[in-house]
Image (cartoon, rainbow, N blue to C red):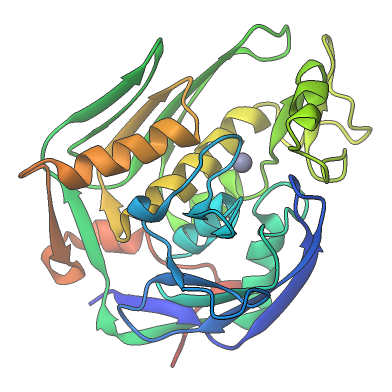
Length: 306
Ligand SMILES: [Zn+2]
């Protein structure tokens, strides 16, 4: 049996939101099996809990937001991606502001925190969403597709009219170890020419070279350069994993994305969940041992029993 996971103890992290620019404290608490990932705004009296599911997503402009109106939590995607990447299914997140801290713009800080807190196995089997039918969503020339595959594979392409980016494609075969090594450290990115426009819309108030890769028309402006030559496409995969983790299960399917963003990822999840016979939910016991092995964790994260 491959067990559901939570974190071994409560942990607290403080940082700023990239869009709001506001300081927030996020507490991650252990949670029981089948709890899922839930968020609670502790700064709003009596705020309803927001369960991290695709149907609870409000806006998807430049980030993925859970909830609507005042009771919402923005920019959940990097945290959710890391939780999925480490196979953590159950966490109760308390947050005293409107946005998950951006940290360094990647998932690296959350991986580091989870190494500190430790991972714990719960005495219940993980559940997998096995894709049975191909589902595609298109908006203009952008599209995403999910199709049957024994394990999670993401084949991602981005296209930017920029000499350093142009077209980048990466095929990522999911395992916790590959996620930590290849994906978790890739930072969010933006083009300098879009910055003014986004600031006018009240976005990226907290954005800086400390939490994003920024490119002018020719080069990367960050003095330290890129962490990987193809850091940007790796970040797209980080975002994709965070967004599709909102399906609420481990995923056995292949996802192909072309110029996608949070909106398309969410539309894909919703369409898949609504389509009759497009998927089935199975216990980890029903799956091949090789698939389960992809959830093995490196020594630094190896789980204790809760
Ligand atoms: Zn991102």
